[in-house]
View 1 (cartoon, rainbow, N blue to C red):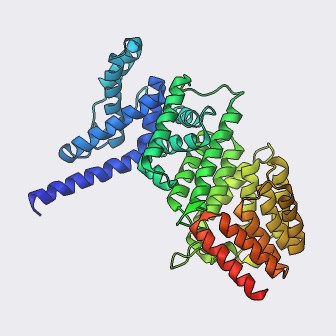
View 2: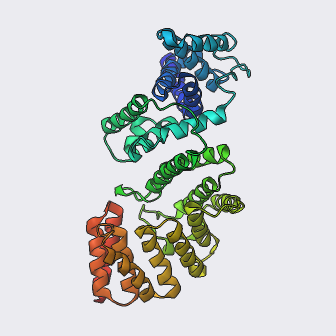
View 3: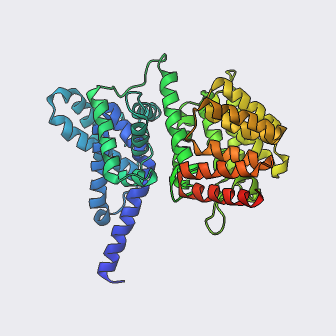
Length: 431
């Protein structure tokens, strides 16, 4: 190998190491810096600066034995420099300076575990609750959570949600500026505010997972990487909040749903719907983990929340070896429960599917037609697709074709559009 080739390989190896460490350590790093600086934007900037230093130094100095500790120490040094430029933070400078004198970059020991690392669990919880603060829009919460806790780059987040990178960058910058302008403290909220804040966090993780499991726009049918990021966030939350049943309920829901991903796409990349999936391809490890998380949620003395109920529905599918063994009666009952604790016309659409299988398509049509009559989901493609399926099973093929055509015109997903159009064409052949 030539000297230039060897240099290129060292640079590439160092870059791969930096990227891997960043994905693992970024949340902890930003969380620790956020607690000390009290400013999420500044904490992320310091962490990014440490990342750039690593990219500059590791190709020549080598990857340190403790890469996470190296990044933390380097970021703290940057924090000291930043605080020295701000006289109002002299006391914190002294605290940070004492830490750095006993923790040198690259030292393979536990000496880097200091004031920034002692409360890493609380720090991560502060981070996710701050990133999902109610003063931010839902889009901003998603972007900031994936950026700070998920370790994703702006480009990765932009590509995941099909927006230009400058648009996503502006969204993240505005989110951090809003937190700064509103003087949102990097702290755990009072116990009275925790349920509301936790609900916002779970909503963000749920949204990220759903976008990965069933993309709402673009050419892709699924985006497994987003599902993985959401499950990683869910596992962090489960470790930080072990006594919160809804956290375990959401994790169970994601794991059970994600277990189907290998079977949702055929060999040629074509989508495969639930009734047609080869259940032998379902990830049994994720099924077991999902059922264990659901059991953990059900052990609580508190009533099950909406995520745990949805996980119980997913568990009915996971326990059925063949589609015809699915307990649709229980699923319909669970959707009825879900409708009482989380009223939504979308829940009613899903309940119509379960009722259609448990009590016949005409019974399912009664449920779906009541949603249609309300006018609340007139532009929701899945309402029309579900209605089309029920109409087809009821032998009303002309109406079924019209419903599927309507669904095809409304969806933003190219894959869904092809499915709905094919169903419409098939229904026309029988009409």
